Length: 625
Image 1 (tube, rainbow, N blue to C red):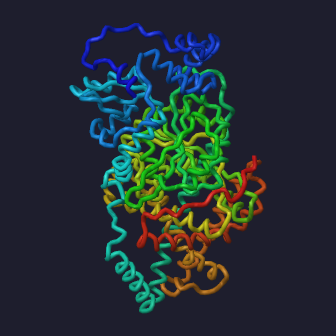
Image 2 (tube, helix red, strand yellow; image 1 turned 90 degrees about the horizontal axis):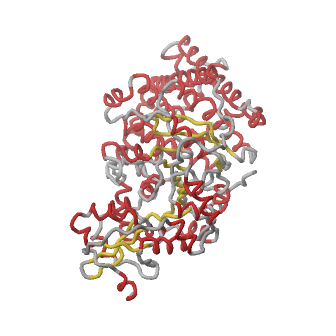
Image 3 (cartoon, helix red, strand yellow; image 1 turned 90 degrees about the vertical axis):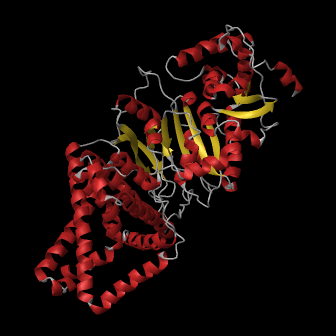
Protein backbone atom coordinates (compact mmCIF):
# COMPACT_ATOMS: atom_id res chain seq x y z
CA UNK A 1 0.00 0.00 0.00
CA UNK A 2 3.01 2.32 0.40
CA UNK A 3 3.30 2.62 -3.40
CA UNK A 4 -0.23 3.96 -3.43
CA UNK A 5 0.58 6.56 -0.81
CA UNK A 6 3.52 7.82 -2.86
CA UNK A 7 1.28 8.41 -5.88
CA UNK A 8 -1.30 10.49 -4.05
CA UNK A 9 -1.21 14.21 -4.96
CA UNK A 10 -1.82 16.98 -2.50
CA UNK A 11 -5.60 17.55 -2.49
CA UNK A 12 -5.08 21.21 -1.63
CA UNK A 13 -2.54 21.88 -4.34
CA UNK A 14 -3.59 23.89 -7.39
CA UNK A 15 -2.94 21.73 -10.44
CA UNK A 16 -3.21 22.94 -14.01
CA UNK A 17 -5.83 21.28 -16.19
CA UNK A 18 -4.51 18.32 -18.17
CA UNK A 19 -5.75 17.42 -21.63
CA UNK A 20 -6.83 13.81 -21.15
CA UNK A 21 -6.56 11.31 -23.96
CA UNK A 22 -9.97 9.68 -24.72
CA UNK A 23 -10.40 6.27 -23.13
CA UNK A 24 -10.76 4.55 -26.49
CA UNK A 25 -7.41 5.84 -27.68
CA UNK A 26 -5.77 4.85 -24.40
CA UNK A 27 -7.06 1.29 -24.83
CA UNK A 28 -6.02 1.11 -28.49
CA UNK A 29 -2.53 2.39 -27.68
CA UNK A 30 -2.24 -0.18 -24.89
CA UNK A 31 -3.24 -2.98 -27.25
CA UNK A 32 -6.37 -3.85 -25.25
CA UNK A 33 -8.68 -3.32 -28.23
CA UNK A 34 -8.19 -2.81 -31.96
CA UNK A 35 -9.11 0.25 -34.00
CA UNK A 36 -12.04 -1.64 -35.51
CA UNK A 37 -13.24 -2.59 -32.00
CA UNK A 38 -13.19 1.08 -31.06
CA UNK A 39 -15.07 2.11 -34.19
CA UNK A 40 -17.72 -0.54 -33.49
CA UNK A 41 -18.15 0.63 -29.87
CA UNK A 42 -18.30 4.31 -30.88
CA UNK A 43 -20.94 3.50 -33.47
CA UNK A 44 -23.04 1.81 -30.79
CA UNK A 45 -22.52 4.76 -28.46
CA UNK A 46 -24.23 7.05 -30.98
CA UNK A 47 -27.48 5.22 -30.29
CA UNK A 48 -27.23 4.25 -26.64
CA UNK A 49 -26.62 6.31 -23.53
CA UNK A 50 -23.74 4.34 -21.98
CA UNK A 51 -20.05 4.95 -21.20
CA UNK A 52 -17.59 3.58 -23.72
CA UNK A 53 -16.01 1.22 -21.17
CA UNK A 54 -19.35 -0.42 -20.38
CA UNK A 55 -20.09 -0.87 -24.07
CA UNK A 56 -16.73 -2.56 -24.64
CA UNK A 57 -17.30 -4.93 -21.72
CA UNK A 58 -20.90 -5.71 -22.73
CA UNK A 59 -19.78 -6.46 -26.31
CA UNK A 60 -17.09 -8.81 -25.03
CA UNK A 61 -14.31 -6.63 -26.45
CA UNK A 62 -12.61 -5.87 -23.14
CA UNK A 63 -12.37 -7.23 -19.62
CA UNK A 64 -13.67 -5.08 -16.72
CA UNK A 65 -10.24 -5.14 -15.09
CA UNK A 66 -8.64 -3.87 -18.29
CA UNK A 67 -11.10 -0.99 -18.47
CA UNK A 68 -10.38 -0.13 -14.84
CA UNK A 69 -6.62 -0.11 -15.47
CA UNK A 70 -7.04 2.09 -18.56
CA UNK A 71 -9.25 4.52 -16.63
CA UNK A 72 -6.46 4.68 -14.06
CA UNK A 73 -3.96 5.52 -16.80
CA UNK A 74 -6.32 8.05 -18.42
CA UNK A 75 -7.04 9.98 -15.21
CA UNK A 76 -3.73 9.26 -13.43
CA UNK A 77 -5.63 7.81 -10.45
CA UNK A 78 -4.50 4.69 -8.54
CA UNK A 79 -6.53 1.48 -8.43
CA UNK A 80 -7.53 0.02 -5.08
CA UNK A 81 -8.64 -3.52 -4.24
CA UNK A 82 -11.34 -3.25 -1.59
CA UNK A 83 -11.76 -7.00 -1.40
CA UNK A 84 -8.20 -7.46 -0.21
CA UNK A 85 -8.19 -4.27 1.84
CA UNK A 86 -11.76 -3.41 2.93
CA UNK A 87 -12.76 -0.04 4.39
CA UNK A 88 -12.81 0.57 8.13
CA UNK A 89 -16.50 0.49 9.22
CA UNK A 90 -15.93 3.72 11.16
CA UNK A 91 -15.45 5.56 7.87
CA UNK A 92 -19.20 5.40 7.27
CA UNK A 93 -19.40 8.62 9.31
CA UNK A 94 -17.27 10.43 6.72
CA UNK A 95 -19.78 10.28 3.87
CA UNK A 96 -23.60 10.14 3.98
CA UNK A 97 -25.10 7.00 2.47
CA UNK A 98 -27.24 9.12 0.15
CA UNK A 99 -24.15 10.65 -1.48
CA UNK A 100 -22.47 7.26 -1.77
CA UNK A 101 -25.51 5.92 -3.61
CA UNK A 102 -25.96 8.99 -5.78
CA UNK A 103 -22.31 9.18 -6.83
CA UNK A 104 -21.58 5.45 -6.66
CA UNK A 105 -18.64 5.80 -4.35
CA UNK A 106 -17.53 4.52 -0.94
CA UNK A 107 -15.08 5.86 1.69
CA UNK A 108 -12.04 3.60 1.73
CA UNK A 109 -9.08 4.91 3.70
CA UNK A 110 -8.09 7.92 5.80
CA UNK A 111 -4.48 9.13 5.64
CA UNK A 112 -4.04 12.01 8.04
CA UNK A 113 -6.80 14.44 7.18
CA UNK A 114 -7.17 13.13 3.61
CA UNK A 115 -10.05 10.75 2.82
CA UNK A 116 -9.55 8.32 -0.07
CA UNK A 117 -12.84 7.55 -1.75
CA UNK A 118 -13.40 4.60 -4.07
CA UNK A 119 -15.15 5.52 -7.30
CA UNK A 120 -15.69 4.00 -10.72
CA UNK A 121 -16.47 7.31 -12.45
CA UNK A 122 -13.56 9.65 -11.80
CA UNK A 123 -14.88 12.29 -14.19
CA UNK A 124 -17.78 12.91 -11.78
CA UNK A 125 -15.66 13.09 -8.64
CA UNK A 126 -15.58 16.89 -8.50
CA UNK A 127 -19.36 16.94 -8.13
CA UNK A 128 -19.05 14.75 -5.04
CA UNK A 129 -16.40 17.08 -3.63
CA UNK A 130 -18.68 20.05 -4.26
CA UNK A 131 -21.51 18.35 -2.36
CA UNK A 132 -19.22 17.91 0.66
CA UNK A 133 -18.26 21.59 0.79
CA UNK A 134 -15.05 22.34 2.70
CA UNK A 135 -14.56 18.67 3.61
CA UNK A 136 -14.63 17.81 -0.07
CA UNK A 137 -11.33 19.59 -0.57
CA UNK A 138 -9.69 16.91 1.59
CA UNK A 139 -10.99 14.00 -0.53
CA UNK A 140 -9.09 12.12 -3.23
CA UNK A 141 -10.37 9.42 -5.61
CA UNK A 142 -9.11 5.90 -6.09
CA UNK A 143 -10.50 3.61 -8.79
CA UNK A 144 -12.53 0.63 -7.60
CA UNK A 145 -14.61 -1.97 -9.41
CA UNK A 146 -18.27 -0.95 -9.37
CA UNK A 147 -19.50 -4.21 -7.85
CA UNK A 148 -16.99 -3.78 -5.02
CA UNK A 149 -18.35 -0.28 -4.40
CA UNK A 150 -21.88 -1.61 -4.20
CA UNK A 151 -20.83 -4.44 -1.90
CA UNK A 152 -19.04 -2.15 0.53
CA UNK A 153 -21.86 0.40 0.57
CA UNK A 154 -24.02 -2.48 1.79
CA UNK A 155 -21.39 -3.40 4.36
CA UNK A 156 -20.95 0.11 5.71
CA UNK A 157 -24.53 1.37 5.49
CA UNK A 158 -26.57 -1.84 5.27
CA UNK A 159 -28.41 -1.51 8.58
CA UNK A 160 -29.37 2.10 7.86
CA UNK A 161 -30.50 1.34 4.31
CA UNK A 162 -32.46 -1.75 5.40
CA UNK A 163 -34.33 0.28 7.99
CA UNK A 164 -35.08 2.93 5.39
CA UNK A 165 -36.32 0.27 2.97
CA UNK A 166 -38.77 -0.98 5.60
CA UNK A 167 -40.16 2.50 6.30
CA UNK A 168 -39.83 4.20 2.92
CA UNK A 169 -43.53 4.87 2.39
CA UNK A 170 -44.97 7.50 4.79
CA UNK A 171 -46.75 5.96 7.77
CA UNK A 172 -50.06 7.56 6.74
CA UNK A 173 -49.96 5.59 3.46
CA UNK A 174 -48.65 2.34 4.94
CA UNK A 175 -49.98 -0.53 7.00
CA UNK A 176 -46.82 -0.80 9.10
CA UNK A 177 -48.44 0.99 12.05
CA UNK A 178 -50.51 -2.09 12.72
CA UNK A 179 -49.32 -4.02 15.73
CA UNK A 180 -49.71 -7.78 15.14
CA UNK A 181 -48.64 -8.50 18.73
CA UNK A 182 -51.29 -6.24 20.27
CA UNK A 183 -53.06 -8.08 23.11
CA UNK A 184 -56.41 -6.81 21.82
CA UNK A 185 -56.29 -8.28 18.31
CA UNK A 186 -57.21 -11.86 19.13
CA UNK A 187 -59.80 -11.07 21.83
CA UNK A 188 -61.56 -8.64 19.49
CA UNK A 189 -61.54 -11.22 16.70
CA UNK A 190 -62.95 -13.86 19.04
CA UNK A 191 -65.61 -11.42 20.21
CA UNK A 192 -66.70 -10.72 16.63
CA UNK A 193 -66.95 -14.42 15.84
CA UNK A 194 -68.91 -15.05 19.02
CA UNK A 195 -71.27 -12.18 18.20
CA UNK A 196 -71.95 -13.65 14.76
CA UNK A 197 -72.57 -17.09 16.24
CA UNK A 198 -74.89 -15.59 18.85
CA UNK A 199 -76.83 -13.71 16.17
CA UNK A 200 -77.08 -16.90 14.15
CA UNK A 201 -78.44 -18.73 17.20
CA UNK A 202 -80.89 -16.00 18.28
CA UNK A 203 -82.21 -14.96 14.84
CA UNK A 204 -80.92 -17.46 12.30
CA UNK A 205 -83.14 -16.46 9.38
CA UNK A 206 -82.45 -12.74 9.58
CA UNK A 207 -78.75 -13.27 10.23
CA UNK A 208 -78.53 -15.42 7.12
CA UNK A 209 -80.61 -12.88 5.20
CA UNK A 210 -78.36 -9.96 6.11
CA UNK A 211 -75.33 -12.02 5.12
CA UNK A 212 -77.02 -12.95 1.84
CA UNK A 213 -77.84 -9.30 1.09
CA UNK A 214 -74.21 -8.32 1.70
CA UNK A 215 -72.93 -11.16 -0.50
CA UNK A 216 -75.49 -10.31 -3.18
CA UNK A 217 -74.47 -6.64 -3.20
CA UNK A 218 -70.81 -7.54 -3.73
CA UNK A 219 -71.91 -9.99 -6.45
CA UNK A 220 -73.77 -7.22 -8.29
CA UNK A 221 -70.83 -4.83 -8.06
CA UNK A 222 -68.39 -7.47 -9.35
CA UNK A 223 -70.71 -8.61 -12.12
CA UNK A 224 -71.39 -5.09 -13.36
CA UNK A 225 -67.67 -4.33 -13.43
CA UNK A 226 -66.84 -7.55 -15.29
CA UNK A 227 -69.62 -6.98 -17.80
CA UNK A 228 -68.58 -3.37 -18.42
CA UNK A 229 -64.93 -4.35 -18.78
CA UNK A 230 -65.82 -7.23 -21.11
CA UNK A 231 -67.95 -5.02 -23.35
CA UNK A 232 -65.25 -2.33 -23.40
CA UNK A 233 -62.59 -4.88 -24.36
CA UNK A 234 -64.68 -6.59 -27.03
CA UNK A 235 -65.79 -3.30 -28.57
CA UNK A 236 -62.23 -1.98 -28.67
CA UNK A 237 -60.83 -5.24 -30.05
CA UNK A 238 -57.49 -4.70 -28.33
CA UNK A 239 -54.86 -7.09 -29.64
CA UNK A 240 -52.36 -7.89 -26.86
CA UNK A 241 -49.72 -9.37 -29.14
CA UNK A 242 -48.52 -6.55 -31.34
CA UNK A 243 -46.29 -6.78 -34.40
CA UNK A 244 -42.59 -7.42 -33.76
CA UNK A 245 -40.53 -4.44 -32.69
CA UNK A 246 -38.73 -2.60 -35.49
CA UNK A 247 -35.07 -3.60 -35.09
CA UNK A 248 -33.73 -0.49 -36.75
CA UNK A 249 -31.98 2.01 -34.51
CA UNK A 250 -34.56 4.26 -32.84
CA UNK A 251 -34.39 8.03 -33.39
CA UNK A 252 -33.63 8.63 -29.69
CA UNK A 253 -30.82 7.51 -27.36
CA UNK A 254 -31.79 4.34 -25.55
CA UNK A 255 -31.91 4.70 -21.75
CA UNK A 256 -30.44 2.54 -19.04
CA UNK A 257 -32.99 0.00 -17.75
CA UNK A 258 -32.66 -1.72 -14.37
CA UNK A 259 -34.79 -4.78 -13.65
CA UNK A 260 -35.11 -6.13 -10.11
CA UNK A 261 -35.65 -9.86 -9.61
CA UNK A 262 -36.33 -10.73 -5.95
CA UNK A 263 -35.37 -14.30 -5.05
CA UNK A 264 -35.95 -16.27 -1.87
CA UNK A 265 -35.03 -19.91 -1.24
CA UNK A 266 -34.85 -20.56 -4.99
CA UNK A 267 -32.96 -23.82 -5.32
CA UNK A 268 -34.57 -24.86 -8.58
CA UNK A 269 -35.23 -21.64 -10.45
CA UNK A 270 -32.20 -19.34 -10.22
CA UNK A 271 -30.07 -21.01 -12.89
CA UNK A 272 -33.01 -21.37 -15.27
CA UNK A 273 -33.92 -17.72 -14.73
CA UNK A 274 -30.45 -16.60 -15.80
CA UNK A 275 -30.72 -18.72 -18.94
CA UNK A 276 -34.07 -17.16 -19.85
CA UNK A 277 -32.94 -13.59 -19.30
CA UNK A 278 -29.91 -14.04 -21.56
CA UNK A 279 -32.37 -14.19 -24.46
CA UNK A 280 -33.26 -10.53 -24.04
CA UNK A 281 -32.31 -8.48 -27.10
CA UNK A 282 -31.93 -5.05 -25.49
CA UNK A 283 -28.33 -3.75 -25.61
CA UNK A 284 -26.60 -5.37 -22.67
CA UNK A 285 -24.54 -2.25 -21.92
CA UNK A 286 -27.86 -0.54 -21.12
CA UNK A 287 -29.42 -3.45 -19.24
CA UNK A 288 -28.91 -4.02 -15.53
CA UNK A 289 -30.57 -7.11 -14.08
CA UNK A 290 -30.27 -7.19 -10.30
CA UNK A 291 -30.94 -10.46 -8.47
CA UNK A 292 -32.10 -9.45 -4.99
CA UNK A 293 -31.39 -11.94 -2.17
CA UNK A 294 -31.99 -11.87 1.54
CA UNK A 295 -28.68 -11.87 3.41
CA UNK A 296 -29.44 -15.16 5.17
CA UNK A 297 -30.67 -16.95 2.03
CA UNK A 298 -27.82 -19.42 1.60
CA UNK A 299 -29.91 -21.66 -0.67
CA UNK A 300 -30.25 -19.11 -3.45
CA UNK A 301 -26.73 -17.76 -2.92
CA UNK A 302 -25.24 -21.24 -3.34
CA UNK A 303 -27.35 -21.85 -6.43
CA UNK A 304 -26.20 -18.61 -8.07
CA UNK A 305 -22.59 -19.32 -7.09
CA UNK A 306 -22.73 -22.44 -9.23
CA UNK A 307 -24.07 -20.47 -12.21
CA UNK A 308 -22.08 -18.33 -14.62
CA UNK A 309 -23.63 -14.87 -14.73
CA UNK A 310 -23.10 -12.33 -17.52
CA UNK A 311 -21.56 -9.01 -16.54
CA UNK A 312 -24.89 -7.19 -16.92
CA UNK A 313 -26.32 -9.26 -14.07
CA UNK A 314 -25.41 -8.71 -10.44
CA UNK A 315 -26.51 -9.71 -6.96
CA UNK A 316 -27.59 -7.51 -4.06
CA UNK A 317 -28.04 -9.00 -0.60
CA UNK A 318 -30.59 -7.32 1.66
CA UNK A 319 -29.59 -7.19 5.34
CA UNK A 320 -32.07 -8.53 7.88
CA UNK A 321 -34.19 -5.99 9.73
CA UNK A 322 -36.87 -6.50 12.39
CA UNK A 323 -37.75 -10.02 11.18
CA UNK A 324 -39.41 -8.52 8.11
CA UNK A 325 -38.78 -10.59 4.98
CA UNK A 326 -41.01 -9.33 2.18
CA UNK A 327 -40.61 -8.74 -1.51
CA UNK A 328 -41.38 -4.98 -1.31
CA UNK A 329 -38.73 -4.43 1.35
CA UNK A 330 -36.18 -6.15 -0.87
CA UNK A 331 -37.28 -4.02 -3.84
CA UNK A 332 -36.95 -0.81 -1.83
CA UNK A 333 -33.46 -1.74 -0.71
CA UNK A 334 -32.24 -2.67 -4.19
CA UNK A 335 -33.81 0.40 -5.83
CA UNK A 336 -31.17 2.69 -4.32
CA UNK A 337 -28.38 0.73 -5.99
CA UNK A 338 -29.90 0.76 -9.48
CA UNK A 339 -28.62 3.04 -12.21
CA UNK A 340 -31.48 2.89 -14.71
CA UNK A 341 -33.97 5.65 -15.43
CA UNK A 342 -36.54 2.89 -15.97
CA UNK A 343 -37.06 0.36 -13.17
CA UNK A 344 -38.62 -3.01 -13.90
CA UNK A 345 -39.67 -5.99 -11.81
CA UNK A 346 -39.69 -9.66 -12.75
CA UNK A 347 -40.37 -12.69 -10.57
CA UNK A 348 -38.10 -15.67 -10.05
CA UNK A 349 -39.89 -18.00 -12.49
CA UNK A 350 -40.47 -15.44 -15.25
CA UNK A 351 -39.68 -15.92 -18.92
CA UNK A 352 -40.19 -12.52 -20.60
CA UNK A 353 -40.41 -12.15 -24.36
CA UNK A 354 -36.96 -11.33 -25.79
CA UNK A 355 -37.99 -7.90 -27.10
CA UNK A 356 -39.87 -6.84 -24.00
CA UNK A 357 -37.48 -4.08 -22.94
CA UNK A 358 -37.54 -2.51 -26.43
CA UNK A 359 -41.32 -2.28 -26.25
CA UNK A 360 -41.16 -0.70 -22.81
CA UNK A 361 -38.54 1.87 -23.78
CA UNK A 362 -40.36 2.81 -26.98
CA UNK A 363 -43.68 3.30 -25.22
CA UNK A 364 -42.17 5.40 -22.44
CA UNK A 365 -40.50 7.56 -25.09
CA UNK A 366 -43.84 8.18 -26.86
CA UNK A 367 -46.13 8.31 -23.80
CA UNK A 368 -47.18 11.46 -21.94
CA UNK A 369 -45.15 12.34 -18.84
CA UNK A 370 -47.97 11.28 -16.51
CA UNK A 371 -47.70 7.66 -17.71
CA UNK A 372 -45.73 6.34 -14.74
CA UNK A 373 -46.06 2.58 -15.12
CA UNK A 374 -46.30 0.03 -17.91
CA UNK A 375 -47.80 -3.35 -17.06
CA UNK A 376 -47.17 -6.32 -19.32
CA UNK A 377 -49.42 -9.33 -19.84
CA UNK A 378 -48.86 -12.47 -17.76
CA UNK A 379 -49.40 -16.00 -18.97
CA UNK A 380 -48.33 -19.51 -17.97
CA UNK A 381 -45.82 -21.81 -19.63
CA UNK A 382 -47.07 -24.96 -17.87
CA UNK A 383 -50.87 -24.95 -18.35
CA UNK A 384 -50.91 -28.63 -19.26
CA UNK A 385 -49.29 -29.80 -16.03
CA UNK A 386 -52.64 -30.88 -14.52
CA UNK A 387 -56.25 -29.79 -14.08
CA UNK A 388 -55.37 -27.13 -11.53
CA UNK A 389 -52.79 -25.48 -13.79
CA UNK A 390 -55.30 -25.50 -16.66
CA UNK A 391 -57.92 -23.73 -14.55
CA UNK A 392 -55.31 -21.26 -13.32
CA UNK A 393 -54.31 -20.56 -16.93
CA UNK A 394 -57.97 -19.94 -17.82
CA UNK A 395 -58.29 -17.54 -14.90
CA UNK A 396 -55.16 -15.65 -15.97
CA UNK A 397 -56.28 -15.47 -19.59
CA UNK A 398 -59.64 -14.09 -18.44
CA UNK A 399 -58.03 -11.46 -16.23
CA UNK A 400 -55.13 -10.36 -18.43
CA UNK A 401 -56.78 -10.71 -21.85
CA UNK A 402 -60.32 -9.56 -21.04
CA UNK A 403 -61.04 -7.96 -17.67
CA UNK A 404 -57.91 -5.90 -17.01
CA UNK A 405 -57.71 -4.42 -20.53
CA UNK A 406 -61.40 -3.56 -20.21
CA UNK A 407 -60.77 -1.88 -16.86
CA UNK A 408 -58.03 0.14 -18.53
CA UNK A 409 -60.41 1.12 -21.35
CA UNK A 410 -62.93 2.31 -18.73
CA UNK A 411 -60.27 4.53 -17.16
CA UNK A 412 -60.47 2.81 -13.77
CA UNK A 413 -57.61 2.18 -11.36
CA UNK A 414 -55.45 -0.73 -12.52
CA UNK A 415 -54.32 -3.01 -9.68
CA UNK A 416 -50.79 -3.89 -10.69
CA UNK A 417 -49.54 -7.44 -10.95
CA UNK A 418 -46.41 -8.41 -9.10
CA UNK A 419 -44.22 -8.78 -12.18
CA UNK A 420 -43.55 -7.35 -15.65
CA UNK A 421 -43.91 -3.88 -14.21
CA UNK A 422 -41.84 -0.97 -15.48
CA UNK A 423 -41.73 2.47 -13.88
CA UNK A 424 -40.29 5.86 -14.60
CA UNK A 425 -37.73 5.94 -11.82
CA UNK A 426 -38.31 9.59 -10.94
CA UNK A 427 -42.01 8.96 -10.28
CA UNK A 428 -41.41 5.71 -8.40
CA UNK A 429 -38.99 7.50 -6.06
CA UNK A 430 -41.37 10.44 -5.69
CA UNK A 431 -44.01 8.00 -4.42
CA UNK A 432 -41.41 6.44 -2.06
CA UNK A 433 -41.39 3.04 -3.71
CA UNK A 434 -43.28 0.10 -2.25
CA UNK A 435 -44.95 -0.41 1.13
CA UNK A 436 -42.58 -2.94 2.69
CA UNK A 437 -45.28 -4.38 4.98
CA UNK A 438 -48.03 -4.90 2.40
CA UNK A 439 -48.12 -8.44 0.98
CA UNK A 440 -49.69 -7.14 -2.26
CA UNK A 441 -47.39 -4.16 -2.64
CA UNK A 442 -48.24 -4.07 -6.36
CA UNK A 443 -51.97 -3.43 -5.88
CA UNK A 444 -51.21 -0.79 -3.25
CA UNK A 445 -48.74 1.00 -5.53
CA UNK A 446 -51.30 0.97 -8.35
CA UNK A 447 -53.79 2.81 -6.16
CA UNK A 448 -51.16 5.29 -4.94
CA UNK A 449 -50.13 6.05 -8.52
CA UNK A 450 -53.74 6.78 -9.45
CA UNK A 451 -54.29 8.94 -6.35
CA UNK A 452 -51.33 11.12 -7.35
CA UNK A 453 -52.67 11.62 -10.86
CA UNK A 454 -50.41 9.16 -12.67
CA UNK A 455 -51.46 6.66 -15.31
CA UNK A 456 -50.72 2.95 -15.69
CA UNK A 457 -50.90 1.50 -19.18
CA UNK A 458 -50.97 -2.08 -20.42
CA UNK A 459 -48.45 -2.92 -23.11
CA UNK A 460 -48.54 -5.78 -25.62
CA UNK A 461 -45.73 -7.91 -24.28
CA UNK A 462 -46.09 -11.24 -22.50
CA UNK A 463 -44.15 -12.75 -19.63
CA UNK A 464 -44.61 -16.45 -19.00
CA UNK A 465 -44.76 -17.73 -15.44
CA UNK A 466 -45.16 -21.06 -13.71
CA UNK A 467 -48.77 -21.84 -12.78
CA UNK A 468 -49.18 -23.09 -9.24
CA UNK A 469 -50.38 -26.62 -9.86
CA UNK A 470 -50.67 -28.06 -6.33
CA UNK A 471 -53.74 -27.49 -4.19
CA UNK A 472 -52.36 -26.32 -0.85
CA UNK A 473 -49.62 -24.10 -2.32
CA UNK A 474 -52.35 -22.60 -4.53
CA UNK A 475 -54.45 -21.85 -1.44
CA UNK A 476 -51.48 -20.26 0.32
CA UNK A 477 -50.62 -18.08 -2.67
CA UNK A 478 -54.23 -16.95 -3.12
CA UNK A 479 -54.62 -16.24 0.60
CA UNK A 480 -51.65 -13.85 0.40
CA UNK A 481 -53.23 -12.06 -2.54
CA UNK A 482 -56.61 -11.76 -0.84
CA UNK A 483 -55.07 -10.66 2.44
CA UNK A 484 -53.13 -8.00 0.57
CA UNK A 485 -56.26 -6.77 -1.21
CA UNK A 486 -57.98 -6.39 2.14
CA UNK A 487 -54.97 -4.65 3.68
CA UNK A 488 -54.72 -2.27 0.72
CA UNK A 489 -58.43 -1.47 0.93
CA UNK A 490 -58.22 -0.73 4.66
CA UNK A 491 -55.15 1.50 4.20
CA UNK A 492 -56.74 3.63 1.50
CA UNK A 493 -60.15 3.74 3.20
CA UNK A 494 -58.70 5.35 6.32
CA UNK A 495 -59.92 8.62 4.83
CA UNK A 496 -62.74 7.75 2.38
CA UNK A 497 -63.41 11.38 1.48
CA UNK A 498 -59.79 11.92 0.53
CA UNK A 499 -59.82 8.76 -1.59
CA UNK A 500 -63.03 9.91 -3.29
CA UNK A 501 -61.54 13.34 -3.92
CA UNK A 502 -58.34 11.88 -5.36
CA UNK A 503 -59.99 9.34 -7.65
CA UNK A 504 -63.44 10.66 -8.50
CA UNK A 505 -66.68 8.77 -8.00
CA UNK A 506 -66.39 6.08 -10.69
CA UNK A 507 -62.80 5.15 -9.91
CA UNK A 508 -63.65 5.20 -6.20
CA UNK A 509 -66.37 2.61 -6.87
CA UNK A 510 -63.89 0.65 -8.98
CA UNK A 511 -61.46 0.42 -6.06
CA UNK A 512 -64.25 -0.76 -3.76
CA UNK A 513 -65.12 -3.48 -6.25
CA UNK A 514 -61.62 -4.59 -7.20
CA UNK A 515 -60.28 -4.74 -3.65
CA UNK A 516 -63.07 -5.16 -1.12
CA UNK A 517 -65.78 -6.84 -3.22
CA UNK A 518 -63.25 -9.29 -4.65
CA UNK A 519 -62.30 -10.42 -1.16
CA UNK A 520 -65.92 -10.45 0.00
CA UNK A 521 -67.00 -12.53 -3.00
CA UNK A 522 -64.68 -15.36 -2.06
CA UNK A 523 -65.35 -15.10 1.66
CA UNK A 524 -69.13 -15.13 1.10
CA UNK A 525 -69.07 -17.71 -1.67
CA UNK A 526 -70.83 -20.44 0.39
CA UNK A 527 -73.76 -18.05 0.97
CA UNK A 528 -74.05 -17.39 -2.75
CA UNK A 529 -73.85 -21.08 -3.58
CA UNK A 530 -76.98 -21.60 -1.50
CA UNK A 531 -78.96 -20.01 -4.35
CA UNK A 532 -78.62 -23.30 -6.18
CA UNK A 533 -81.32 -24.74 -3.89
CA UNK A 534 -83.73 -22.03 -5.08
CA UNK A 535 -82.97 -22.81 -8.70
CA UNK A 536 -83.56 -26.47 -7.85
CA UNK A 537 -87.08 -25.63 -6.57
CA UNK A 538 -86.45 -25.57 -2.81
CA UNK A 539 -87.28 -22.73 -0.43
CA UNK A 540 -84.40 -20.44 0.42
CA UNK A 541 -84.17 -18.78 3.86
CA UNK A 542 -84.39 -15.39 2.11
CA UNK A 543 -87.83 -16.40 0.82
CA UNK A 544 -89.03 -16.70 4.41
CA UNK A 545 -87.84 -13.18 5.34
CA UNK A 546 -88.01 -11.08 2.18
CA UNK A 547 -90.46 -13.17 0.18
CA UNK A 548 -90.18 -15.71 -2.62
CA UNK A 549 -90.07 -13.13 -5.48
CA UNK A 550 -86.99 -11.46 -3.94
CA UNK A 551 -85.27 -14.81 -3.41
CA UNK A 552 -86.03 -15.83 -7.01
CA UNK A 553 -84.64 -12.56 -8.44
CA UNK A 554 -81.47 -12.93 -6.39
CA UNK A 555 -81.10 -16.57 -7.51
CA UNK A 556 -81.48 -15.66 -11.20
CA UNK A 557 -78.96 -12.83 -10.89
CA UNK A 558 -76.56 -15.32 -9.32
CA UNK A 559 -77.13 -17.74 -12.22
CA UNK A 560 -76.66 -15.04 -14.86
CA UNK A 561 -73.46 -13.96 -13.15
CA UNK A 562 -72.14 -17.53 -13.24
CA UNK A 563 -73.02 -17.85 -16.93
CA UNK A 564 -71.36 -14.50 -17.69
CA UNK A 565 -68.16 -15.62 -15.96
CA UNK A 566 -68.05 -18.78 -18.07
CA UNK A 567 -68.77 -16.81 -21.25
CA UNK A 568 -65.96 -14.32 -20.60
CA UNK A 569 -63.55 -17.17 -19.89
CA UNK A 570 -64.53 -18.95 -23.12
CA UNK A 571 -63.88 -15.80 -25.13
CA UNK A 572 -60.57 -15.31 -23.29
CA UNK A 573 -59.30 -18.78 -24.27
CA UNK A 574 -60.63 -18.68 -27.83
CA UNK A 575 -57.22 -17.55 -29.13
CA UNK A 576 -55.10 -20.21 -30.80
CA UNK A 577 -52.56 -20.52 -27.97
CA UNK A 578 -55.28 -21.10 -25.35
CA UNK A 579 -57.90 -22.98 -27.35
CA UNK A 580 -56.89 -26.29 -25.81
CA UNK A 581 -58.30 -24.98 -22.51
CA UNK A 582 -61.82 -24.40 -23.85
CA UNK A 583 -63.26 -27.67 -22.58
CA UNK A 584 -61.96 -27.02 -19.08
CA UNK A 585 -63.85 -23.73 -18.71
CA UNK A 586 -66.95 -25.65 -17.63
CA UNK A 587 -65.00 -27.11 -14.70
CA UNK A 588 -64.26 -23.69 -13.16
CA UNK A 589 -67.15 -23.96 -10.65
CA UNK A 590 -65.16 -26.79 -9.04
CA UNK A 591 -61.97 -24.70 -9.05
CA UNK A 592 -63.04 -21.53 -7.24
CA UNK A 593 -64.17 -23.15 -3.95
CA UNK A 594 -60.46 -23.29 -3.05
CA UNK A 595 -60.47 -19.50 -3.14
CA UNK A 596 -63.09 -19.48 -0.38
CA UNK A 597 -60.72 -21.49 1.77
CA UNK A 598 -57.98 -18.98 0.88
CA UNK A 599 -60.20 -16.13 2.06
CA UNK A 600 -60.69 -17.72 5.48
CA UNK A 601 -56.96 -18.34 5.78
CA UNK A 602 -56.42 -14.67 4.87
CA UNK A 603 -58.88 -13.55 7.57
CA UNK A 604 -57.06 -15.64 10.15
CA UNK A 605 -53.73 -14.11 9.16
CA UNK A 606 -55.21 -10.60 9.21
CA UNK A 607 -55.57 -11.13 12.94
CA UNK A 608 -52.51 -13.21 13.75
CA UNK A 609 -49.89 -12.32 11.10
CA UNK A 610 -50.89 -9.50 8.72
CA UNK A 611 -47.33 -9.03 7.42
CA UNK A 612 -46.53 -12.72 6.99
CA UNK A 613 -45.39 -13.49 3.43
CA UNK A 614 -46.52 -16.97 2.42
CA UNK A 615 -43.95 -17.71 -0.25
CA UNK A 616 -44.81 -19.66 -3.37
CA UNK A 617 -42.41 -22.45 -4.30
CA UNK A 618 -41.14 -22.29 -7.89
CA UNK A 619 -39.53 -24.82 -10.15
CA UNK A 620 -42.15 -27.53 -9.56
CA UNK A 621 -42.78 -27.99 -13.30
CA UNK A 622 -40.53 -27.39 -16.26
CA UNK A 623 -40.65 -24.61 -18.82
CA UNK A 624 -41.61 -25.90 -22.24
CA UNK A 625 -39.58 -23.80 -24.66
